[in-house]
Length: 307
Image 1 (tube, helix red, strand yellow):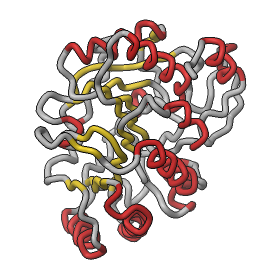
Image 2 (cartoon, helix red, strand yellow):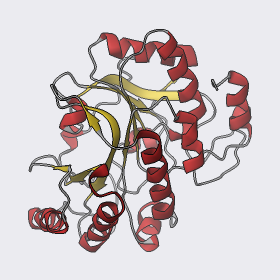
Image 3 (cartoon, one colour):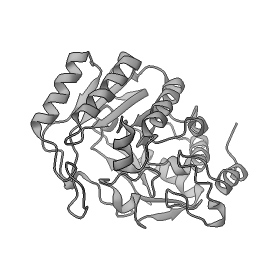
């Protein structure tokens, strides 16, 4: 069933889209925990070349970076849009146009970055764009803190899910994001994503992902035990039916006051220990990062390009 503007208004009047369950009347201008009203805001829509190779490819992923966030990790690299006021308000019609414009620019896919607090609006705009000729695979790129029930709004609209699985222990999730239920919510969300897409499908000629789930895990300095527990969970639960991306790009921003050990970069030997562990437990379907990715220069400029 297609999303209507009336249904969007119903969702926004008592918002329970994310696990925060803040019940904000966003239709009346109240801001949810995410910091947003019912008006869609974004900070950039452009070709993005810094995702996994099977997402960016050589053409680049058509990434739309949305303003606001329901998780708000204390070390967030995109804090200027996740925490701040940076972003431009877009009508739903304009959002559909942006999707089609990225396709016209040759994007490998449409990449919706941190869009969970706008799920009904996203569903509406995707449906409109598909009616107007959008053919790209749609990627839903998320920090993982999602309500599995809300994700059902995207069934049949999203081809690739790209969630993080950040924290295992409630204490870690509390310290980093004030979200002690993170692991329970994120794993339920990943199960729903897998239900919708099934096993990964790739284009044999290009190597590009066309369907499936690719779970990212950012290794945090000093939290190697946490990383091992997360990777073991993913492998024991899904085996080779999903892909896993193990990332070393943790970057403590200069203007963020962070407690130890989050106030330093990940050591090369820490990252290598996690890669060795992943190999030892049998993870075969995945990606790792080379040295040199933990730099602020890899954070895209949120300059309203493409809006």
